[in-house]
Length: 198
Image (cartoon, rainbow, N blue to C red):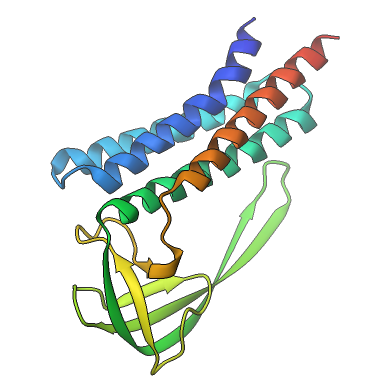
């Protein structure tokens, strides 16, 4: 019975804790408590994530549930950032003064002891904007070339990174993806526990 509770509750708790941490970071006023609450929620998210490892179920099904949980966590973070920019974002036109491509490589050991390396390219856009304090915007793709003008949306509270104005959404698409991925995580993990009992 405890396995079923863990299988159903762990993905929901992980996504919920991360959503709480991201919401605090994006929406609460800056104070000594804001950072502390956000960090506490992130630590609880990590501990809850690790607790899922001890689930007695088919490892392949647990892995599928873990992947679905990661998709849900990414989507919930995106949704909260999107909602913050949609609600309070300010549009401005900027001159792109330079675009620098930066490549970061991360290496780590996986849980099964294999070495993994991932490479991500970032594009740092140097900006001179008509309004606002924004001087730089980092994206995973090049939004404009140096010398071009670009309309961006920025957070006047500077809690969410600026983005090209035409990419701002109300966050509902990411919310739906987070909900679906969380349901998939719960169903696969519960299915894995039930499967292992037969």
